[in-house]
Length: 292
Image (tube, rainbow, N blue to C red; front, side):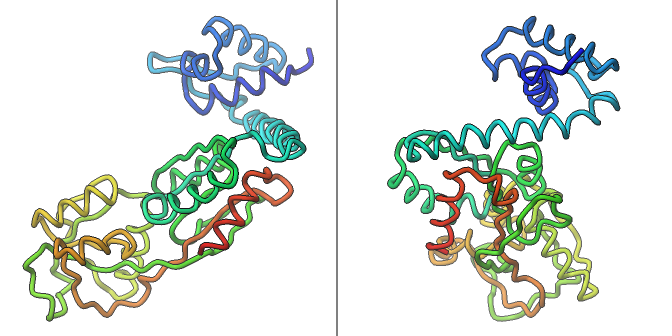
């Protein structure tokens, strides 16, 4: 039995969402229709592809092996659709961008405003997360541009990695903290972002190179939560300078003097190979380069 391309496209959404019902909702299908497609795809492959459990579905080894090929088909179909949009002069289409929190808050809004002014009929979809989550969205073809702080680690084989700016991590403390004396980092309790955060990885690496291992006071998800905890007097934290400028000017945070190499990090864009970029993505990247 030959493979049905539509079944492979549905399979990528089931795998990404971990649920037949969630995939059905996203694809505007009924759950029985999605189940029937997965049954036919399983028959065509000749091996079980999904294991059902009370929380949804997970991939079998055969399903995990099929998934990269199904994702390639999805990207090719999107590329064909983007080509049609290009022929229409970018009067329609979708721009899918994933960005880590600092870029999403401090840089992305201005670039997207300029993009929307130039291409008002293009739908813009933005995913925000930590560096690990953003790169996972790119890998799963849920975004065609990923913007992260720091390098991407081991990039995918068909990814293009390009720095487009720079950010610095600084050590901030609650208002009223004396700002003239450098802190003892070996004893200073710190508030951290969650693991997987580029901010945390860069700061921890800089501390490790200096032989420092300060105690952890608290871990919180997201920069805003960490920032608010510092403002409320819970402790100090390493935060991106781009994200705390207003609070420093308003006196809500205090910047502590610090001599610690390795706290500057590139702002990086990660994209599939240029041949696979949509015209909307290329237009967005051109604006990003012009503004930063």
